[in-house]
Length: 336
Image (tube, rainbow, N blue to C red; front, side, top):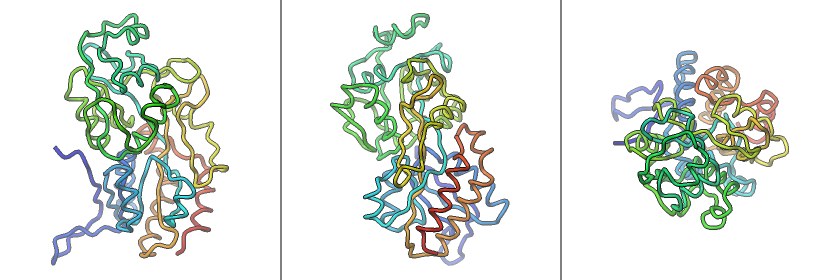
């Protein structure tokens, strides 16, 4: 089963080649695919212009924009200022969302299972092997946990979702930080690999006693059971728009070169600890300036008219003050 998906909106079939031609081409992160798909449909209806976005993972998206095979790349793992400079790229956050642990446990309802970053790290280190382990039982005294082995599901591709999740584990679990660390691809101590948020969601949905991590929209779309998580303040929080917004409210985008901000383990009693932004990458001096201009039109439209659609899928729109900063970046850094 191929879990990688492509939005092709307003493509027209060329008679000679039978290939789709789209106005704007992009590739990368699977994390924002649900909202980019929704925006693309609405944008097509309003303007007649299309978007071809390949949901192939942040790592592949970065490679495609570096190779200039797409108009824009998309990544949940932001590039640092020196890398942007080296590649001649401009980066900005497009929307924020959250990553949630998801499980397939008989008799457990969404939000009933409570996990901590320490315990999640130990599960992904392969130290906690069974669901009735004392560390999980201590957090869930009222739940009847199975004595079965945990099937760990993780990403097999270069992934911004993995970057955010591994960054969170590095902050919450000292052994994870020392042995594995943070990255779009890491040396996993255990687990079954799956491609994309789509692949992890599909695998967890089909495998009893499994655990995985996905962007929240995928958990909802696939009717997966999410876990509650203990945050930095020691409070048990559920994944909700309010808890995502609480985490996002601490971000200081104006002071971050290249808008490089990581939203994991933010302070606040109500903050969801695995909140993240997803980013767009474009060339400062694009080969196809007409396509570049069309892409900026789409992103401007999404900022102006896409907030409600984002919130319907439990993404967090960028604050208006940040959007104004981003629009200045477009004007000053992208040659038209």
